[in-house]
Image (cartoon, rainbow, N blue to C red; front, side, top):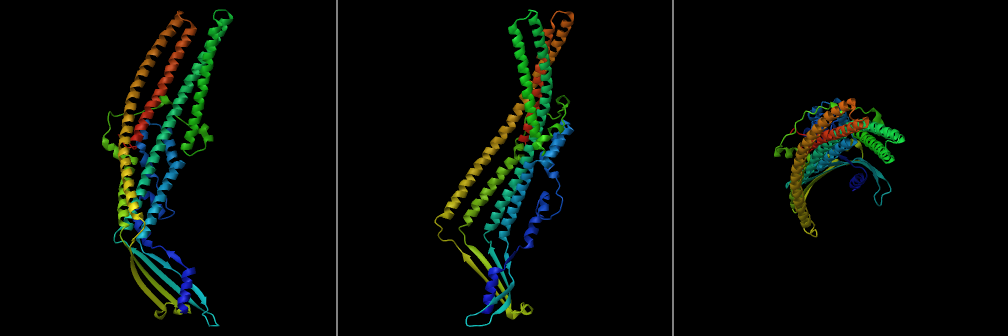
Length: 464
C-alpha cells in the first residue's frame, strides 16, 4: 500500500513527455529542401526556390539590370514574402503535430515521495519511477486521414507562397516601369511648361503693345497654370510610387533619393506576345493547383467524418518501479507492469456526428464550386491579358505613327518659320502638340509593358 501511494503522488507531481525521435526522422526524410532547416538547425537555407517561383529568365527579357536588382531585393527582403514563408512553416509544424497522433505516447515520471499511513507515528519515503504508454490503434486509418488532410493544407500554403512571390515581383515591375514612365512624362511636361511660359510672355508683351487682347493673354496664363498643375501632379504620383517601391524591396521610404532607374527610351522588350495560350497553362497557376488540393482535402474530411461513427480502440501500458532506496529501484520485486486495451464507441451524441458529416459534405460541394470558378477565372484573366496586350500594342503603333507624322510636320513648320511664313508663336504651339503626343507615346509604352506583366502573372510566371 505504501508503494502504491508513493507512486500515485509521483504521477500527480512529476511527469515529462518524451516525443519519439522517429516522428521527426520520418518527416525529415520527406521534407522539401527549403524546409530541412526546420529539422536541422543552423543550416543555411538556399533561396534558389524563391527565384524559381518568379522565373527570373522572364524578367531578363527586359535587359535591365536595375530592375533585376530590385526584384532580387524584393525576393529577399519583402516582409509580405517573409510572412508567406513563415506561414508555410506554421502549416509544416501543424502537419507534424497531427502526425504525432498516429504514434504511441510515452510518459515518464520520477522522484522521491514521503508518506504517513493512518495509525503510524513514523514517516517513510521511497523512490518511484512510473512509466505510462498509450496508443490509439488506427485500424480504420482515421488519424492517418486527418494527417493527409493537414498535409493538403501544408501543400496549399506552399502554393500561396509561390503566388505571393509572383504577385510581389509583378508589383515591383509594374511600379518600376510606371516610375520611369513618369520620369519621361515629367521631363516632357517641363518642356511644355517652358513653352507655355514663353507663349505667355509673348502674349503679355504683345498685350502691352496693343497687339493682343487681354482675354487672349489671360487664356495663355490659364494654360500655363494648368501645365504647372499637371507637372505637380506628375511629380506627386512619382514620389508616391517611389515610396511604394521602397516598401516592396524592404527599404525605408526615406531612401527614395537613392533609387536608380533606367530611361524608358532604353528599355528593350524582347518578349513576343502570342496570339493564343494553351489551356494547359491554367493548371500551372498556383491558385488553380491550390483549389484542386482543397477539393482533395474536403474529400478526405468527408471520409474522416464517416469514420467518426466507428469505434476507437485504445491500448495502454503501465510500468511502476518503487523502492525505498535507489539501488533496488529496478529489481523485479519492486516492479509492477500492466497492459490493457479497450474499445470506445459513441452511441448517442445528440446528432453531432450526423450533422458533422452533412457539414463536411456541404463544405466539399462549396469547395468544388470554387474549383470550377477558379478554372473559369483563370481563363478569363489569361484572355483579358492577351486581348489587352494585343489591342494596346495596336494602339501604341498607331500613336507612334501619329507621333512620326507630327514630328515630320513640325520639321516643315521649322522651315516655314525660318522662311518667315509663320510666327514664333505658331512654331511654339506646334512644338507643344509634338510634346503632348510624345507624352502619350510614353504612357502607352508602359501600358504595353504592364499588359505583358499581367500576362506573366496570369500564367503563373510560366513561359507562354
